[in-house]
Length: 101
View 1 (cartoon, rainbow, N blue to C red):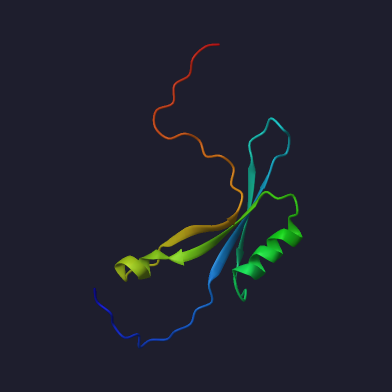
View 2 (view 1 turned 135 degrees about the horizontal axis):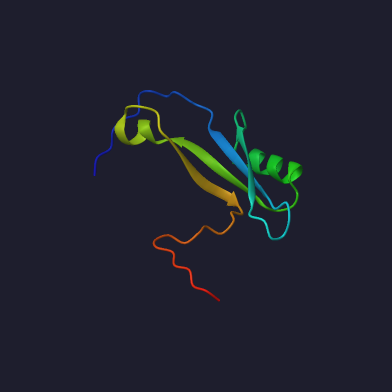
């Protein structure tokens, strides 16, 4: 294990994403409305905003992280980390086969 002293205390405000999922009609797929939120005090403020503006319960809050700085120290790369909420089921991965019914 190694521990190094932190000498650069640059504080950056985190960025968040809010994904709001809507279904225009029951047989339709989910539609995504995405918002980038900056300047929030913390994730609780973002969750409160998502709850107050989209009250149907189908919303998701994610942290936006610069993985380029973390892993390679080079170019900016963004990753989204789910923190709260609901996401529609993801399609299966791998080969998909269909059969007649």
